[in-house]
Length: 373
Image (cartoon, rainbow, N blue to C red; front, side, top):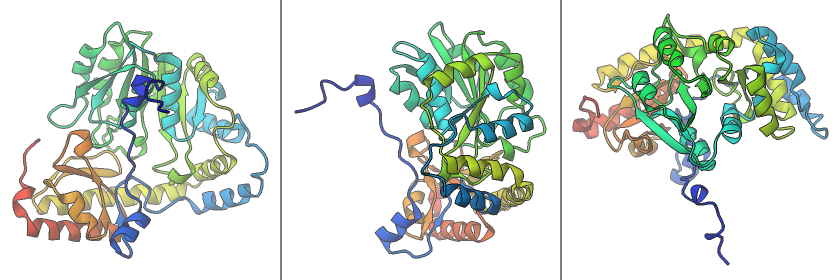
């Protein structure tokens, strides 16, 4: 028996998301001890000790279902963000918020407009609903081409996504450019602003997506506890939006989707401002020093507003670094075959990375030639 004739064609056509290689897998495959992973934009300091303790305590109660409304986290976060509790929707990472938008607003023949390359889940959630993804190439500096995205909006467009800062490039759009773009959108098109990395942005005119939630009802801002707060393994994120839009997403959300351990960790993480400050300081220092060192090696480094760097190394870098026990993220699947994405790690991890790149470049120097792809 085969299911080929029964599965939905748009689901069968999806290429599954491939996460970065785990450290344990690399050590097992190649027998390399103490491998370094700088591929998935995780917090190199780990979660707040307060969060770890809170999650440990919450584990004693996992025989009970979690609070399906995330009341504690909802109340704390609403107060911090200056929004009403009804404007928050929680999910297993911010990716689930995106999926809830897709379930609520997309179907066959509908269109989603986004920049490309950007977060790999955007095409997947659109295709999963039978919708068409309309990708608009980034400009020459790997920044969202917002005028071109405006031109790509059609009568079939139901959702538009802006990833700010953008993954995998680390680039961002400023407040004036975003304002011109949003004001040109039809009022009934759902605008999703993905701000998974917004805490790391350093440009002075970086826009706060929450301003648009207040001004434009069909706007959702996605944020996460996976990056700055170091809770990637706990899988918890949230969306901020108008109460009407949140109500539709709540209809599409599964009950008890956020587990009790994740909620406890997120609540505690929000209160550990010292850990957040250490994380941001480490990221700033690492971004600046890595950019200088990689530039000195003759590599093209895209300026970043995130916790990672897009680096043009030439082909073959990903595999070469694996054999030195350093895991980065290959960008061939995003249409950038000569680039890798490098997460900013601890000073020791950054040193391992630079040393491994130096070995790679010394072996095959012509691959490090500059210029845009």
